[in-house]
Every structure is written in structure tokens, then in C-alpha cells.
Length: 176
Image 1 (cartoon, rainbow, N blue to C red):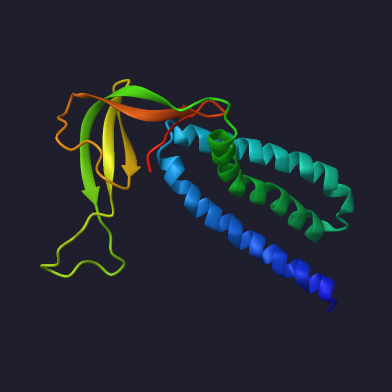
Image 2 (image 1 turned 60 degrees about the vertical axis):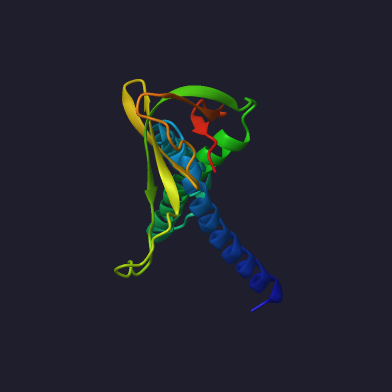
């Protein structure tokens, strides 16, 4: 096997692993995006459209039925799988809009903690972060934060949170 092929194979593997690491890191931003489900489904639809166009362009290179199946599976599944990552990243990072403080009605803030193998009885549990619940347009929305932000705030109080409108129009709450 040629050295050039080995280097390309390793680079491809590292790129593939890097995409999964990037996906895992982007989940926290997707969780803090208003209407994230809509962003995900629109991204998947766009990815499938790109996959169809790519498949139509490349179908002349497929010689037999197995090659056609491989081509179409790769052209449809890979873009559909990674499209939500691309949609979230471009929405969040390529936006021309500035972060602004917006008013929301506070609902509650709850700590959460997790441990891979569970907790030992009597063990003092430190929270890993906080879920922040707000009321927006009559719906309760949940966001994640690394630390408690609104100690002593009561349900119904108005709070300010940093929100940035994304490139695709989906607003992201900028909580760390």
C-alpha cells in the first residue's frame, strides 16, 4: 500500500472523528436554540437536496447496481446526517447580528447532576449545571447553563438573557 494512500486514509479517519467531536460540542448550542427542531429538520431537508444533486451528478460513475446503491446511500445519508451540524454552526457563527439582551418571564431554575455509574447513598452531590426554564409566547422553554444565574428570582419575574439571531433566523441564547 502506498504511503500517500495511508496518509489520506488516516486524515480521513481523523476528519471523521473530528466531525463527531464537533457534533458533540455543538449539542449544547442546539439545546439553547429557539425552535431547534425546525432548524434540524430544515437542515436535513437541505442536506438531502444536496445529496440528490450530488448523486445525479455522480451517477454516471456508477457501473452496476451495487455501485448505484453505494453511491445513493452515501450521497443521501452522509449529508442528511451532518446537515444539522452544518445548519447549527452556520446559524450561530456566520450571523451578522449582534447579541442583545431580551426580556423573558422566569419560570424556574433547577440543578442537574449525572454520574456514569450513579451516586453513592449519602454522597454530597454537586450540580453539573442548571436547567433554566422561561416562558416565551405562552410556551415553557428549557435552556442549559453551567452555573446558577437567577438565584432568588421568583416565578413570573422578568429576566434578561443574551440572545443572538442566527444567519438562518433561529435565535440562540448565549449561555455558557
